[in-house]
Image (tube, one colour):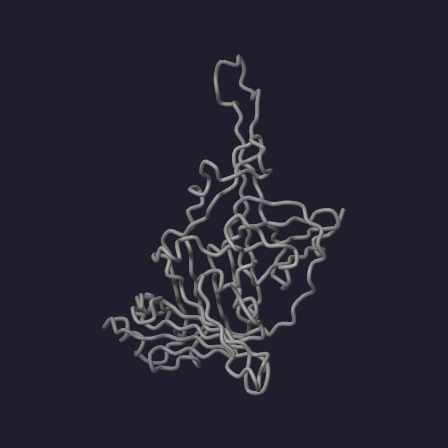
Length: 349
């Protein structure tokens, strides 16, 4: 018997060269603490004939494997490292530069936008990666073809920012014995350092909390198709795995709670005024003047409503945002992360 505190997880900033081509052990270079002891959920759907007739009794007489599934849920105190990873794999597109490769060679700026999945050259298969999970001394598995189905980011007064992720895999896992990487040294971002603007209006002093989410609705059932493969290759008795995990409709949501200070937000909502919204958070210094940083920008947004409520003895607005598509940027939102990670989404060789 072993304890859940032994749980370790290794992952990679690289993407698989293709769905079905798992990363090698040498590609698994990162580890990051997370909240809770959730482990990868691996299940096998099975067939039995319990409900069928002609047997002379109500019990099953046979059982067969059908399909294998893998899913994971992770929640983090949001560091710049894991924020970059989440936006990279959730969006599928990144541009990385060094703002000052001579004076600050350890600083990297990553800009994430939704990939152009309607472009046949890009396609609707989002990037997949591989993770290794060690439960204890005898239970360590590698899970390939993991795709981010949803991310969420929230901030609340007196707390660090929180990041949540949902991942779905092909259903493939295998035993693994690699030595997992040590925890990365990271910089966490706090609500205390967040600046929120709606148009030209800075609402940081009134802000109590915000919630952002982006969902890639994945065609999970459609991934099981003739020829998609088996958990154990070439074994037709083994459960079937997915051959792809493509994206259908995408959804983006934003809301925040602010102390009621004036009627500007209410006016924006009632008159359907288009406003750019930004959420910016800075952390520790990386090098020279550059800090770990997140910029989350919504170039085109409308306030759906501003519901008046009470928190304690103060009035508040609960604001829900309609995030619109911006034709200029060709995306509904842009996430920019500055950290000391050289790259995300480089295809493994």
